Length: 324
Image 1 (spheres, rainbow, N blue to C red):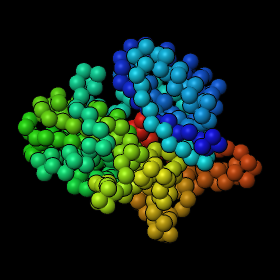
Image 2: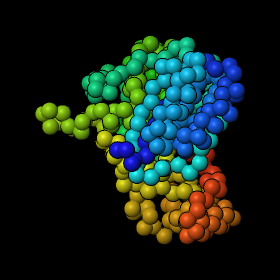
Image 3: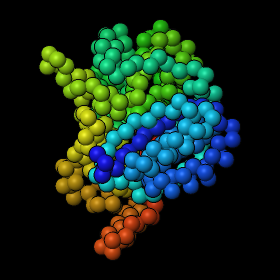
């Protein structure tokens, strides 16, 4: 895999009162290492996904782990033929994953981690309430059998959704999962703060599960995962073994799209898809069409077009490594 691009998803909660001072040195390190992607820094820690050559990824990880508090940072790796990112950004945020509930701090309290190899046994227990903490467009293309879909548009909606569920009581045994683990750090801390005693979450998230758990056990029984896992880069989705899936992406709304979606008259590359066509005004679609035209011209010239993506609320809240 020496010629392949290494994709590293990471996150780590550790108090960083002077986090703004880390931005410039880390941006310089990433630029010198020829990595692309996004890293988020906040007082509560770091989160993000970067991609680049093996030596570059190793250099950035070493720089991060040299920061006091980040020594034990873990990351997940996958590989691609081309870099799925266009630019490198180190950004400052209030939260490295946005829940919007003051005082919820995984550095203080968090749920019980469950190893991927033990996850199926846990969620097969009929007394366990299994909750998918991801957004609706992510759940739509894959989830664990029997998991509850909160049907939320953004992670900010999750706390209100939990409080509205009468079956979630202090004695409910709850297991939660997300893409790479970071949203569950916040969601399990939230449930514990709400008084729920037995709260569990999938260590390393769906990505670690798909990397380590075979599709079938020794007896030929399928595991508990169904479908693909949405990822926050141009791979769009991955399956077992973290192999890229068959989904495309609408670059107007950042949702995954199927071959059927792309055959729809409502689909126009970079402009709209069946999911978002009625959510955008004609003026917005005209603007997206012009941006798409500029992208195609840049490709013809062999250049990278670095213009901003059309906006979609919460579309690229990094949740991998969510670490996204």
